[in-house]
Image (cartoon, rainbow, N blue to C red; front, top):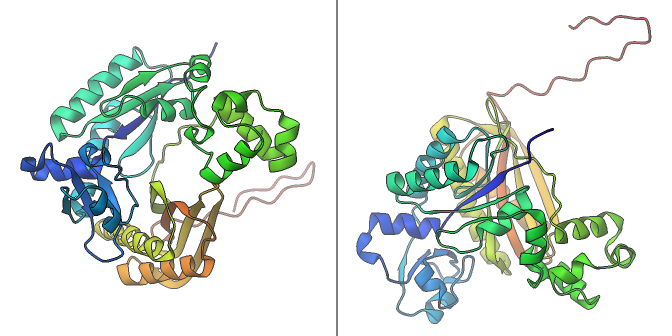
Length: 361
């Protein structure tokens, strides 16, 4: 019999704020907000002391200052964040064989078949904390969905493991939006049908859901509520065919000005990373996830390869303006593809008629 799946979600606690506290230990214990200084700047992250006042990422910095007037506000240092991120995930990948990065501060790992996986994870968390100063919260389950939900429990320094049946009970009273994949608009539409909690969605009539959301989404929603998820942990090998930077927000970003400012920061972060590696690509793409979880991508192929911050930023912002999201946004991302150092996909080999042999070219 195949071994039971063991999937972990590793999430760095208040990552940007923690990096700043490592750089400036005298700020420890104080409410800290990482944000730009412009009139339309938004919060990149906040320490747990600031979060107690209601401050969250993607919130307008001016509003965050009103919520927590005693907070220390410092500009983001993405170079320091990337360097610390490399330290953390280098240690993780040295201990775990199958790791899928999901951004600068989180990743999934597949520990199926690993002897005593919880002990391995606890030792890894301790090692990362000791050597980098970063605290990782861990969720463990038989799939990515459960692992992700568990990693949010007990933060900071959370460590929670559970099976599917336990998850169905543990999260039964939670609102449907607690499930990754169900945004606020979908949650509102579910509530209109009388499905407010995860438990109610578990018992929902699939035919009724299909009438409102369509057959595919109805099956998806029922599967999420019952914590069924067979999505794999995907690891990359060789040169990546595309490189992206994206960010999911605690609070949906409503105005186009705020969305554009975030896109500019993401494009700069992406290009600075590619410049260090000497990689250039021709296709710029953006990713936009709306409040109702609708995900849209737009792309443009340039005349030549580039990793120039100005060109990639201008292209990404132009794509965003052309799309003009009609709802608040919960995720933004920018991607560069069609790299010089990656061979294009080969066309499929011709199909031979029965009894005829085709030799490779």
